Image (cartoon, rainbow, N blue to C red; front, side, top):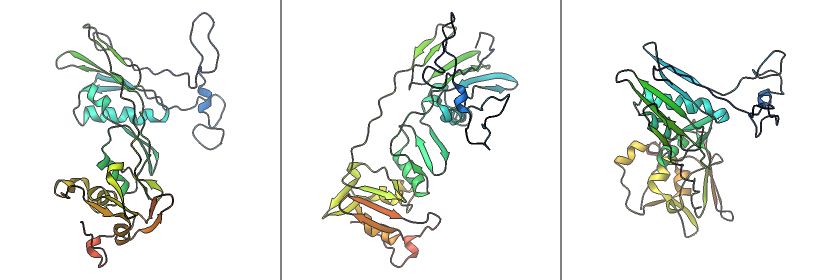
Length: 293
């Protein structure tokens, strides 16, 4: 963006490492390998056809406000590009976030229900509540996209830049403003618990501190278990105050809620199965009382 507010949004890619493996003689840049975006299976939008370029996820984007360029934004990241750009725009427009905060706010991505890829920082309660509704958050978190963006505020004539911290990102300004985003913290794996809870084959993200084996039986921290099985919602936790160290027996609670239960004592896996369209309210079931100790 220049000092008059003219903007350019530009994304370049060489696709695979070293692109096509061909360097342009005397110019020092690689030719891309974007032909790999064609689909060898006929019938899709990227099927191989003459005089055609494959469609790509690249989404260099310009936003206008009252007819004037307001924001330029883009990202690398393959299929995660489109959602990364869209979520950042939503953060700015709908949630009134400064551009840097909008970029660093954790993002999610789903190529198809129910699987969800997610960034570090998505609250555990949020994930549990969504998993109770059938969404499946992948076990390992990852960084999605790498947003770079600029905003021109016409009301005060100031320019703002934002840079992601998951790769090298630098903001350079006409008013000698310069900064490089601090590198994101390395993703740490949670310590494994004494057993695993699976619901319809999706591993639930309970931490080691939230799980116990008591006399060989699986117990889970009461508020987290009730949230993950859809008995309560995250907003209910304001009122639900279990005693410190309150755990519920996973097998008995799941049975009371109508789950098909299998406890593999050898591998320490508690497997629950249930049609997610069939929610049972334990208060409506004569055998559905839940008692916390």
